[in-house]
Image (tube, rainbow, N blue to C red; front, side, top):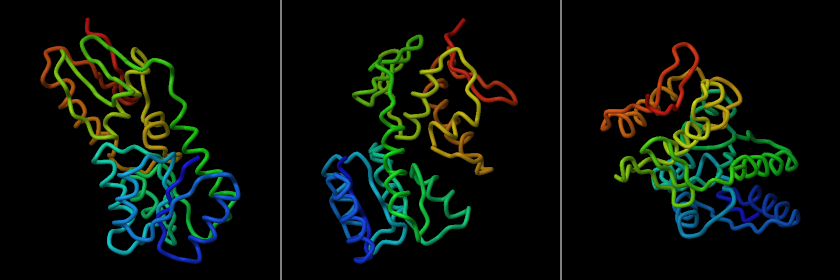
Length: 225
């Protein structure tokens, strides 16, 4: 794998770089938030390992900037903060997983491999279609009735998951696990907020809504009657 480590603590960075390279992974290091953001923007990586507390720009802000720009490279957050609220904040910012310090290197490596493996499990179809809605998974683009619809990275992943399960009821638990990477319920309205934004872009301009709420269960992408 090609990895980017954004970590300002020299001792921790040297320890991780040594272990990752010995494990056969090409590892680039950035010691500040701005340098990490620049490196992640200028080159492609299989995964990012990002410390929460960084000089110049904190890790949460780095990942938010990347996600808002459409960069969906898997992210593992490292932090000395281990409270539930801190983990939830990291995941809300676009992280795929979270590891509190101190940690065992074997666990870090396993978590990095897991987030890369989850992201790479993509069905063969490059273009998904439901009615006049089209999602191109390679170009990362969405159109409805031939008109481009700009989506943020998380909105794109949410729509992609719904379209992959067209005609099926998708539960909140399924969305939390497969779109956000949560293995627990953060007890927030994060799904409702993103779904509302997605529907305003996908359904409101059209006379034929495609995303249906299944009360008490979740959502369903369906072909119009």
